[in-house]
Image (cartoon, rainbow, N blue to C red; front, side, top):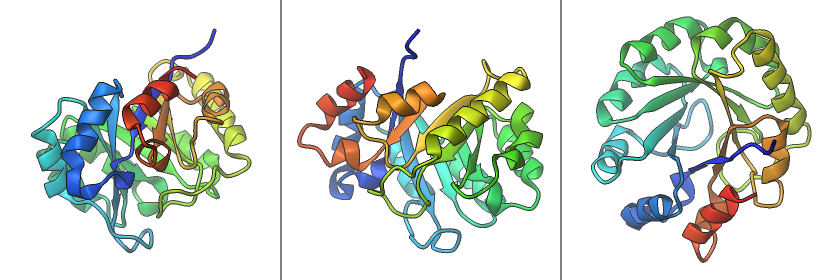
Length: 220
């Protein structure tokens, strides 16, 4: 059976002078999520979106706002993003020496909890926390900048994480999201490897018709 794809357009690649239109495109294309990449210039070498932008997005859409924090000290930003209107908050396992504390903090705000992993981090680091999260975000590029190519070996990592979920009886309750280099021509490969949600930025907002592109992603 072919799995139905869920799409999370990354507004990092949208026109920041007209984010309202980008949100309309996501809604018209029937995307399930709005993916918000948060970078602090420390954990990754780029600086992007803060809680005020999420608050402004919240005021114009009912879509699930999916905040991906690529930041040091993620615990400092959980409550600001929760109050701004995020529906789910994901942080990097590499960014905290006490991931369980961050997981508990996110859970205490009533938001969905996501845990992300970089391409070079052993997937075994996820295992102690599989039972406590709603989502695993697999980075298929080195985080920090949009428009990168899908790294070889990423599909194998997705398959291994899916197997880990199966072994811990979490296959039905934890979603796998994949972020980085996802295009129309490799979307089915990523999905077949075990992904539930595809994050796409430039592959959507870099096209002439983002609405149609989202629909094409959903039809792969």
